[in-house]
Each structure stands twice: as structure tokens, then as C-alpha cells.
Image (cartoon, rainbow, N blue to C red):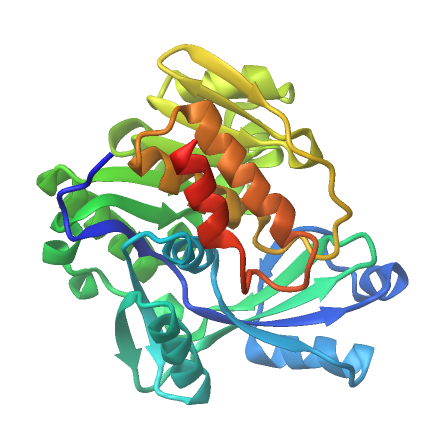
Length: 332
């Protein structure tokens, strides 16, 4: 399906440089961190964790949930842009170079007095990731820094739930949503994390009911949002508020509802190395397919295969194979 606007997908979210470190289950338990979750920390708290586990190899990646989706979408061949906030520092330059490499328009507000955000990701042997995030400059993204003209040039706006955790970010998210509504730009919204749903539920419900054309959630997030533990019941609960809903179920695949029609989409088995970015990759594949006119079930298959590939490596970037994967699904 041909698109008429110059930008296909415009993301708004945090800009974080991910530092990924492998740890044992015992080490994670001793740190008393919530396994598989995300918690907001200070730079000093991140340092304290690293001091506790000692010096070891680590990988750096330009990340952030919505950013991962935007990068993967661009790798598949999509026209993408991203709005965020960066510090004037080495990590900020690292982040800019990464997006330039993928040909993504980066609308980054520069914060002179705040460092670029970082996320310390602890990976246990089963591939589960536990995230400790210092938002840094990201926390200071403001509504006045949202480019409404750029959003009006986009087919879709993609907003991450993490933005609801701080007052400035929250205002920026709603400024973007209002710009999208005014311009007729469709809105995709991701719940991001169970703690976000739990702590920002009223804002989240307002977005789902009033702005979102498409919602992404994993099984736990959907359960917290609806109070329904059974995934199909949770799917129905969200679908009553939004036209198109996707719930990812890990190794069980995903379930999709559009206008009352439900698809259960399995995924091929994989041995996980690092679960970082799995949901982000699913969203990228789903949106890429949707913008090109694929059915919801086929969009979910593309997203699931992209996610299956990412969990079999360290980090949330695939260095090869995404263009061919996306092209294969679109041409079939």
C-alpha cells in the first residue's frame, strides 16, 4: 500500500544508551531487583550496582523502547523519524551517530545541564533482562519541543508509555497526541511496562480511549490494565476501547483483535539469549506490515519473527536480515 506522507512512522520517547551486562541469578537476587522489570534509578545507583558485581564485559547500544522500534522499522525499509532529548555529552553524540547511520530524522532537544539517559540492563542466563534506568536528559523533554508540523507529515505516531512517568515527558506525550489528532495522523501506543500501567493508569486509559488507533501490550501489562489474567479476556477488555489491539505472549506468540475479529498467531521456538527489545521489535514489524496493507495476522507474524531473531543475540539491534525479512512478507 502506497503512503502519501513523507514520514511513515514518527516516534516520541526516551533516548537511552543501554549498557548490557551478564549476571547470574544469585547476583540478581542479592541486588534485590525485580526480575524482568524496569526501575528508575540515579546515575549513582547504577554505579553502585556495577561496583557490586565488579568489572566485566559490557555492550553499549543506542536504545530506549520507542527508539528500538523506530530503528528496526527504518532497517526494514520504512521512512522514520524520532523525537527525544539528549545531553550535550559523549553519549549524546554516540546516539546521534547511530540514528544518522540508519537514515532516521532525529528531532533531539539538547539539554545542556543534564546528561544523556542511560539504562543498565542485567541479563541472566535465561535471557531475561532487568533494567535500571537513569532518564537524564530524557526526563526534560517538553511539550514546546514537539514538532507538530513533523507529526502532520507522518502516517503514524508511535508513543511509549514510559513517557507518562514524569510531568514534562507526560506533557510532551500529550502534545504529540494532540498534534496527531489535529493532523489526522494515526496513533500507535505501547504500554511499555507493568509498573507504568499500575502507576499511570488514568493517563493510559485516556490515551487508549481518546487517541489510540493501535495498542501494544504484553501479557502482564494487559492483565494489570484490565484486571483480567486470562489473555483473551484481557484482549477483549482493551479491544472495547481501541480498534486494533495486540498482546504479545512471549514464546506463545501473540493475540490480535480488530473490530471484534480475533487472531491467535504462534511463533517459531527460539533459545533466548537476551529478551531486550523483543516487544519493540514486534511493534516495528507489525507497523511496517500494517502501513503496507498486510492483514493483522500477517503483521503479527512479521513482528514475531523479528522478535524471535532479536532474542537470540545480545542487544536490541539486528545488524542484518531485517530488509530481506520485511520484503519477503510484503511480497508474498
